[in-house]
Length: 147
Image (cartoon, rainbow, N blue to C red; front, side, top):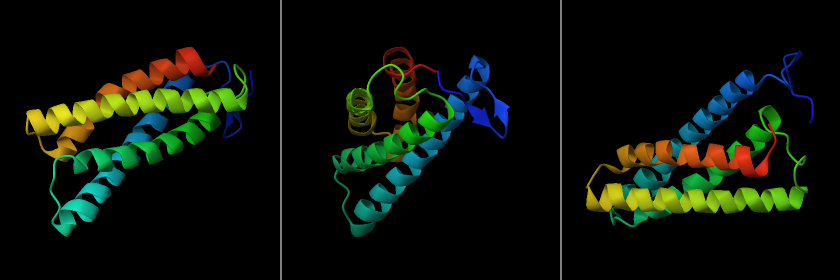
């Protein structure tokens, strides 16, 4: 396991602190995702007079992809031991597989909330993100990285 140090403090064996850092990484990634969704949906689509329900999925996919990259890099710096379980190439492939599955869950939830329940898009996005975060954490922790 690689050494994890923050402000001179070695927390490599402090699972509680690593979990809190994961929540920080995930929380900031969620904020990045919601902000990007808001910008994409309300400025690129609704701001141009486009209001088709499927455009929420386009905004969701773009925001999800960019926030996943943010989460991957920050998570590897602060929480996970990247490259210790699999080769980097396989690790990246697994991260993208898990992320694509999470995106599928996210898109399905967005369709359900927006199209079927007629919830506001941003409220729907927050709810979908809350559900998908459990998938992301468990799959990364159990199947991809050592923390």
